[in-house]
Figure (spheres, rainbow, N blue to C red):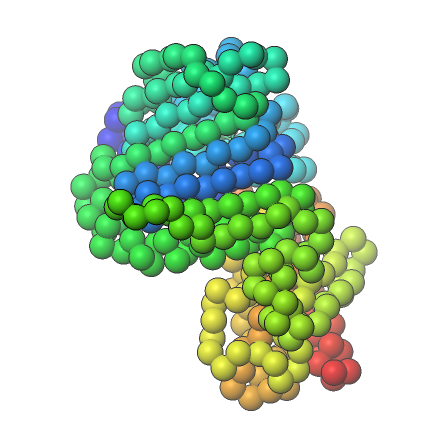
Length: 330
Ligand code: ADP
Ligand code: MG
């Protein structure tokens, strides 16, 4: 049974970035306006997510990291119109299986915080009082130590995994309004280095300037396309002739209803249309698709990065028409 749980856990948490993604989304679900991600040795030794969200109430301490425990699913109909990132109760239980999980948390109803230690089965094994502001800190040490092969692979690919994580955190920094996001890394005995820092501004424009700089922003133009009825695409795209010579995958960020997602078909279309206007260049693209939650399904892959649209072809068609207009007018 333990072995089976290990396999399942390895499917929700595929790598460093999917692990941190789950924690950041939990912080966003908890209403945090400040989220700090601290890594040791690029996440190999440990990673920690510190937020100022609502905290976990004491009656949930015992069940917090048990499989399928979630506080986010009121009734079954919620699945159709989900607004929180999480709802399966799999992240914390999986992280327990794959590494060493501790949680420090305090709600506004408590005067002190509690430090919680969980074992690899998700059982609460130790509990002590500690000082902390309202919010939650989740720490994971030695991710994948329970899976020797994955663990080796993890340390071999750590630079790549770290790069993927930074790109993902950029995505949250771009799309999250009013949320301060800071990421830092400490390697060995070196001083902490801050790799990402946003102020939590209220517009996509300001977030782009914080993440990529004002020079990059000046090379972009707005995208605002009505797809049909209640669907639309908003964001920014490289102006004609001001893209990059390289195919920088890390300069294209797609979102559906504010969630970072992989959209290979959209990316292909955007590149193709852009190249039509400017040979051998790739655009920077930051686009949020607003689509009724009943018309898309984020439940397709465990890490929720892939998304299924009930009417993908008409979305792509409308996007093509809209973007062609963008590029013929510029
Ligand atoms: P899910 O997000 O699908 O509910 P998780 O395993 O990610 O499942 O988290 C389990 C539960 O732990 C959540 O439903 C929530 O109640 C609580 N929780 C996790 N992280 C936080 C956090 N940062 N702040 C407040 N509550 C949290
Ligand atoms: Mg979650």
